Image (cartoon, rainbow, N blue to C red; front, top):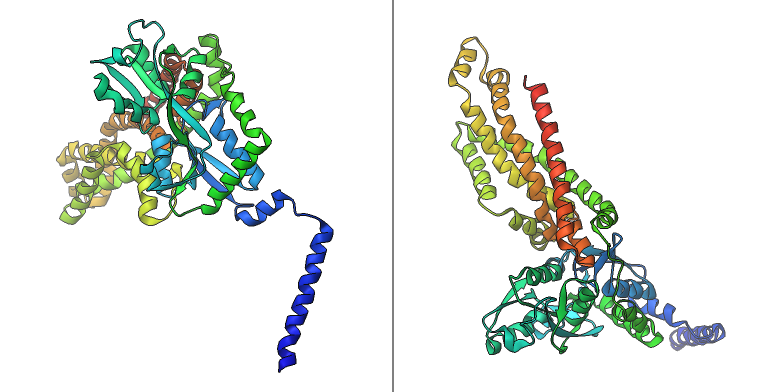
Length: 487
């Protein structure tokens, strides 16, 4: 028994010694191989949420998402052997997506705070920020905080700038209004609805360099540190890989080189005139228009099916059937469309644990909302047909179903058509609300463009013209179909 017990141990020592000697012959293991073997992320793909407009950290150039955060996460992913899929959602939406496990991590110029540490785990800081105040370039009245008494300033929702502005608001007697985007804040100051903006200094510096119409009037105040975030207690391997990759980049100089690309000389190719802006932005806007038309078309088909079903249920003699249809209509007509966009994209995954595509969320939002309105259009159209028409067809021997199919519904549909066309147009315009969940429709693409070049007014004019042309063309097409099939 002693030999049987000792034999395997002896062989184990021999094998271990042989393996050790073989590893010595091979030489030291490369750090990259060791990292990929030990990190637990090698070969995996992670979905990363980010802001839509926060230049120079994330913005679009020639249609591609770029910036400090984007270059950093991609470089770390390449170094550590994993893949990333970037989802440009907006800051608040990105955090909601992280909480609902729609994304694995968020990098969006996000300050590390004690409050956020209760919900998220953060990487080592990758950027030390600071806060500055800027005013309109032609403003000569505001020279410092003491000139803000009785006035309104703007800051970005959830940002370090908002925190700092609110911390001194009472001392200097001004009011803070929070907005969602840097470009929107800058336009607010230029338009005069606010006298100053508090924002992170690199973002302000980049905007001023793009001739955004502002100038800074205060020194930088030390702010928070930016960090990469994951849900608390989750994706620890991803967080560790980020920290390792960041340390490597700082050690080999790639980190400083990356920052200098955007901060040392923060200039970009800004369109010189309106025509130049139109030409450069046209491909991205056409992509957004395509998404808008597609999601509207799919949603309208689904909404028609739901609306016809609910409309007929509302005129049923069965009280239970009528009650179901009435409840459906009341819920979706009585609540905001935007609420359902957030509910379907962020809420359902938290409740069910099932990830929902942004396209599915968009279609559900638009079709259920419009389906409720179409149900009322159908009910009203059917009830507007003279009851004598139904009675006459029944007296000629037709059953109720055939009477409705052959006599009542065709007449009702002719009366419903103008309202249905109107609902289709409303749905196309309502699709712009899906930008709140990061859906790449037309207005979303417009935001991406002016976030990088700060040509807000001109970009919105172009977007408005495209909407106008698309809606006019759709109206003409629908009216033609109405005349052809409802003679």
